[in-house]
Length: 224
Image (cartoon, rainbow, N blue to C red):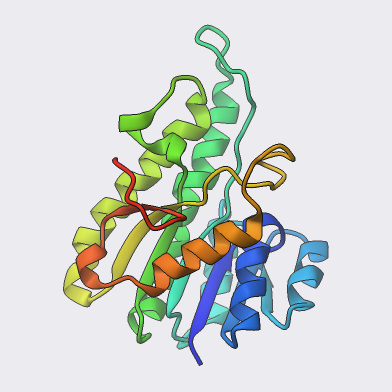
């Protein structure tokens, strides 16, 4: 039975990832920040852990509880958008730092803590949940906090893919599209079920040759 570990698995895309993988017979491990979210995840038959990706001690406890457990697919999904409508001259730097802590340093800490779990598995895949807003080639302006955090996450994932290639670990960035979640809003055109099915198909079709690349939920490649 393959194992997937999903951060931010208590709602939205993370919870849908957990639901679909569990339905397909995978062992699902998820991290959440609150007891209520833990209950929702456990209701799917998943192994739920309370962990905050910005808290190094919390991540260390998660890693200790999973020592020796192979993780075939690690999905660094936890993320926040931060305040909207920020403009030069009115930047909230404390809020910007929080977005970077969650969206960049969080995945880095989780990956570092669970690297040996991934290395011990058969599939050896790490997926960074990014956004098309993090593509420098396609950047539309604005979205300073969120876009910069995802662009930095992409850079981290790319660098990591090179460093981990000798160990046979595949690292990719994914963008889910504009999805109807708390972050995406009710007007988004894409249902979570469709987005997750697409990204799961991308993950299932990965090979070492595809490591270090950035994929849309439909399988198309996104420019850095």
